[in-house]
Length: 179
Image 1 (tube, rainbow, N blue to C red):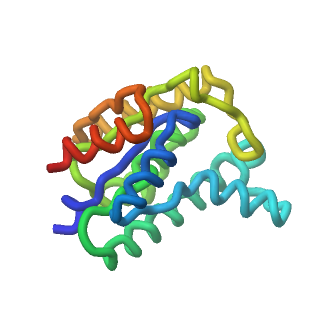
Image 2: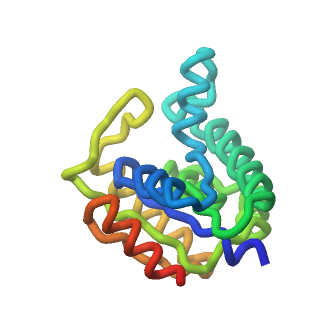
């Protein structure tokens, strides 16, 4: 079944998720691109309104569409595919922002399922940085991670915390856990 080969890496911003996924892709695995960062870049380029500070609800809708498209594209990739966040991240984001979770988002979380083991990158102050797209503070990154953990667990996923280690060590850790 496709979902067993779809492995999510989630966590707060600036915790090393994308670097890990880049490493896994270099090792020959399929991967997806993080929705949030890409949407912010696109919206900044066109002066669009779907940015977290302008319209978090619209931003969430765009992330949902992106994650669903990534899921469908991944069905055409062979073997294991690593997801830089997944559909449940949208629900976690809405909860973090204290926004209601619309029924269609809840339905998407139930429909788009991944491997039950989800890797979560805990907040890591030593590597956390802000940039053009990542404007959250470290404390916001901690709260984001907590919201995502609660969300994934509430949907029956088993969280595996990534060690605060080098990208190579994290890559080895993940590969050792997926078999």
